[in-house]
Image (tube, rainbow, N blue to C red):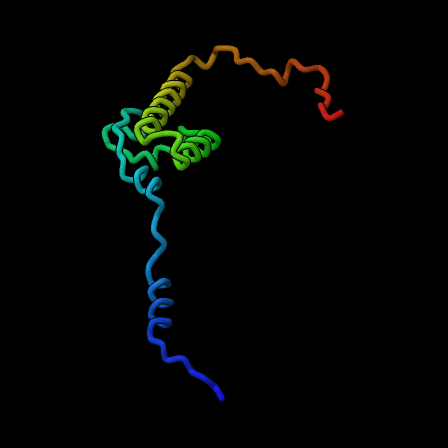
Length: 124
């Protein structure tokens, strides 16, 4: 004897789950919807989301990961993330502008050229 289930709830419940895209994490949505006015580089003259700033070339990957982890864990507020990101982007842009405006004739330190012997590995 074969028993067939005619429960209509089983089919609809499974179908509904697959139809809706997964919801975005609230912390991620907050970063994407919070805009900052940064007057540097390609961001000059327009508002940019914290999410885009975090993903920009101004924020090193390790800093981005650390900020996201701390914010997601609730250890940093949105306002703190905004302040830190704005500071990092502004400083990085200023350093880049300074490097572009400095004379090329200045001697640059090259530590690799001064080493006479290879550095031993510290594994012993």
